[in-house]
Image 1: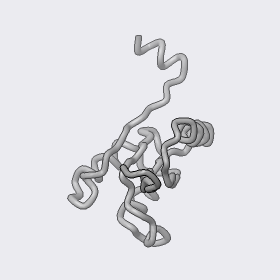
Image 2 (image 1 turned 135 degrees about the vertical axis):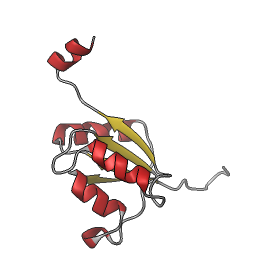
Image 3 (image 1 turned 90 degrees about the horizontal axis):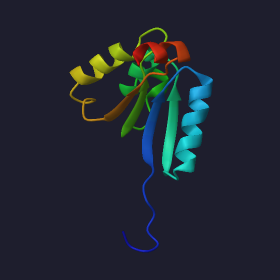
Image 4 (image 1 turned 90 degrees about the vertical axis):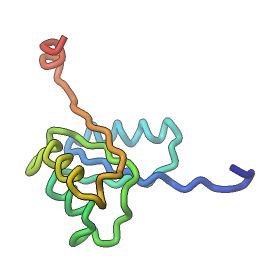
Length: 110
């Protein structure tokens, strides 16, 4: 990259319904100094509308990275992921699945 050139922001879609996790993600991206445009969607139904540029999301950019919570209202993250994988126009987007465990759930996993 040449001196003085600006990096293009990474288009990130965060699909998350927990406000605390949204805030932590925002802070982590800022702390890492990743130049990004972060869009947040709160449930699986809206996520698919966003990805298909439907309705109110018609002019939204295609994300390059999706941060996907698995436990979402209306349509869970597993269903969203299955739909993304089936659509040729979407299945090249990089995604990261995440699941937050309570202390009790974490101890059971050990």
